[in-house]
Image 1 (tube, rainbow, N blue to C red):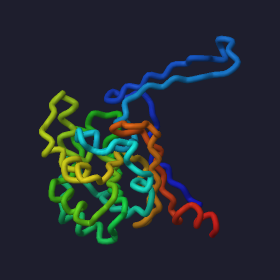
Image 2 (image 1 turned 135 degrees about the vertical axis):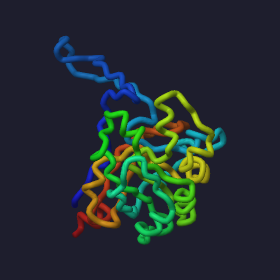
Image 3 (image 1 turned 180 degrees about the vertical axis):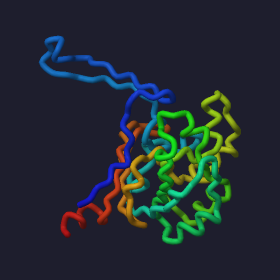
Length: 229
């Protein structure tokens, strides 16, 4: 059973501060060690629930695990260039294997060009156009998983600029309609096939707008079938 870990490590970052402290420590004479971690729900690899953008949207309590686990179509976009729009015609050419009910996993390998720790990861990133988001919606996907900041306006947040919802195109077109967003994957270069079994397990934070998640791909099908083989 071959498993690819698509999850970024949670470590302090200029966009996503992490508070990590030792409540109990062996070096202080405690019998056991206990670490306290505090972080936002939309940093690193995480899941967006519709409540993230929409006051009447579903919370994490209302997003079933079935929405983030299942077959995924890996869309190879690894030849993407900096600041390049990814439009519907490009998806049409690359994502013919996408099926209704899939997770659409867009693999750009963007971190090879600009590391996550660098501001250029956002400021020079490729991005999805509105017609690309509409194309994905028309294919009746259940979730979109990405390894790059998929809305162009995300870069503006670095400067404290919040654009109208219409410019947050994947959130406006997809998340608004219940298509779950799974953001900031890593290691997508290790996905060497068009289809994988995808598993995103968000932390069970009730009635929340999103949650950090452990995300993996099984290259040989669902884990039970892979183990039986």
